[in-house]
Length: 164
Length: 351
Image (cartoon, rainbow over all chains, first blue to last red; front, side, top):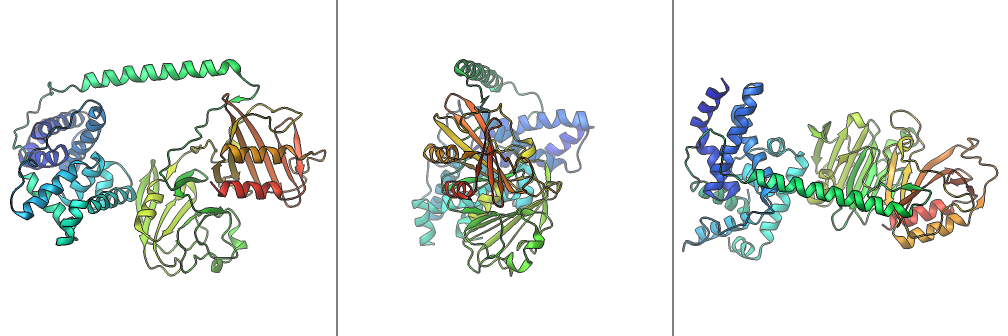
């Protein structure tokens, strides 16, 4: 049952999971690795204890926790290469702003990036983000506030925001 | 959403289109190097533990008669913040805030309130924040009247304990600024914070941890404080380079909040010298009225002196109405004025 449930879930939500993973990892290969790792872990778990009430929510949480654990394990050995998509700025100013924003997102801590992706891409409420990331509601708010403050204070982005 | 948040959302949506499309095989991955990293981490951990154990053994070769120090005395607190503890709750507060142990008499303003007194002695009217309170961190027993009682809360978990938390901006008793509250029913503790900005409120509330022994080594309750062998009989506090930790405990004896921690501080070496000199100047106390039980203590102090050789000495202080006593379990001294209590308050609130 667990295998069938997971296969069905993957068919329905694989693209969404890969998108989430890509926004976290910023690399196609790593995003696929992350989703695969998460799904294997989920499958093992479901075979043991059964399928939870909210299967997609569960898988999404595992993707986030795997990502945060991954980053901790790999941070000492991982070399951050050029980030896909930010090496060729589009001449259009608006696209250039987004390229800049994408680059700055890459400079955030994994935890802060995860919080912003869940809040502004997945559009989840802070309470749900806290449950996924495994911290307190106040911590999510604090992480998000500090990350936004850091972005806002970046000289190049401040210039963009001022012009707007 | 403001312009920044809109740009952020647009950027994430754009970039998501670059994500791979799969399919992702549902088989055990083989390309990762995680096992290598885990093994390396394990080896590193084993080596680190071995080095630490060896260091502890080596430092023990010149042992005093006193207890080996186990308390970490340099908690990881961000710049501009200091540690504050109340019972089993430890958190970070702006370092500019002094601590007082009762909100009676005047509204709170720019301070940490560790309310350990009897609520009946303070009317609710005095439990108010000043109209412009600056930053206030408020500890009290759950159920006591506080200005934070009106904030709507929602459930959450802190360190595995059920909690309720909430925020407000315009509550009548909270003055100006942003306020937040965390209620920990099973710890019988309420923590309220008011500050001019959300950042500070979040910083304080998100730093809450629930622990039996705080990062300075102060136990949540005096009865479970770390014990050490008796000190010398000829001097209360032996000479030597030391860092003093002050654990201040409530005089309330009612279970479950009795004798709980209401303040936790570290003194720097210069202040430790001042305190040592003042304590050693006190005369021996033949009466032992406070520790002997004939005078009810106002509150209790446990002072730990962590010496540079790794040993620790515990001094117990009982602060009475007319008499204070301090003992290292071999020597007890008396103080017929409040000079030590005042000195402790002065030194610790400077930290």
